[in-house]
Image 1 (cartoon, rainbow, N blue to C red):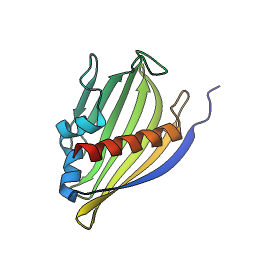
Image 2 (tube, rainbow, N blue to C red):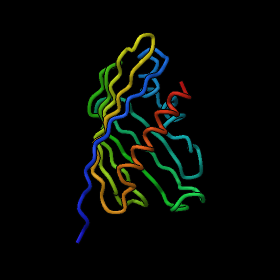
Image 3 (spheres, one colour):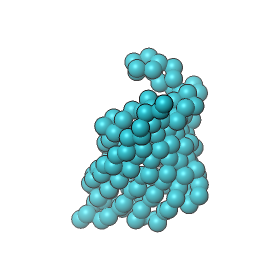
Image 4 (spheres, one colour):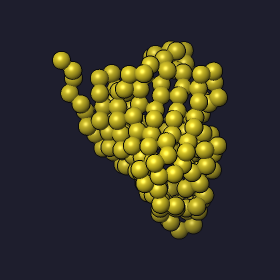
Length: 154
């Protein structure tokens, strides 16, 4: 018998001292996104690809390091861009897998709003976590870390 699915939603709000167009571009441009979203890239076996358009896909693959609970494991995610409105929102459906076995599925939305001279970014993550998943708290911590890296990159 399989374990029940754990459903969880979280919201992260960040404000960046950059115009909305610049913050949005950090998601839209694959090279820029790779710098904050795929920091282990390039490493042997790792890859990041993004076809930023409605219906386009994003693929990430990394190899877990020796200092992780699963050294050498292949961590991958696939995402489908469901909606994109320039400088306003991005909505993606995605899954994550370890060594080819799915452990979560997510709907992730990013909303961009002017906040004075900067940008308020709201990330809403709605997840379903399967057996052997990282779990809601680790996923939320991971997104906080990624959005901090975004701020350091732009």
